[in-house]
Image (cartoon, rainbow, N blue to C red; front, top):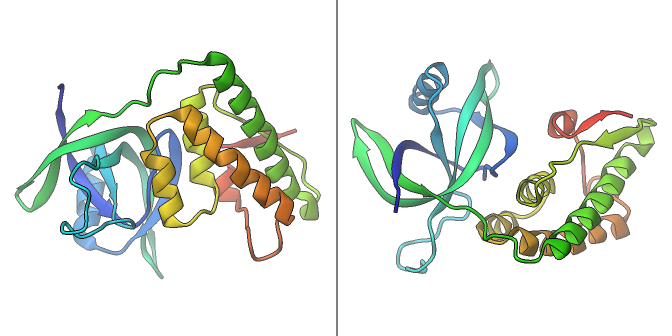
Length: 221
């Protein structure tokens, strides 16, 4: 197995592959680590702590997935430390970890989704997910009378991760989608979730779309 090594940043937020995300950082030591990686354009492993379980209760056969990505910007926030913006590049499986000068490093291998065996099914699921998600976004902007067009990834793997990242799901649900190793299965899980949001009518306070969430998705129609 071909393994590589990178520093690990443990944060509450789950970073999905093929997505742009942001989070707040208050730890000055972590800031120094991130700033070094940003300035030197080094990849870093983003490991979510929001679904951690104790070693005694963990499944020994469960794969240790995380996302390898890069930091694109760090901006100081007077009220909340630092706002960090990152790009998630690819899902990885952490094989081993060790400490070097106080920094946690992980040996990892790439964790690609399974090859698509049924192209027609993958196409049908992708088209249905795109259709529903476009409706979801359009409905979100009706009150402000804005017409938008969603820019979708062509690849089924990227599409499934991008929609998983966008939807305001519980941590357990996001981790379940993240850990799936089949993009068609991930899309098949997402489709009824989007249908449920549409059926609920996007009630005020239940679902809120922000410009930051959508800036990599939409273009003026």
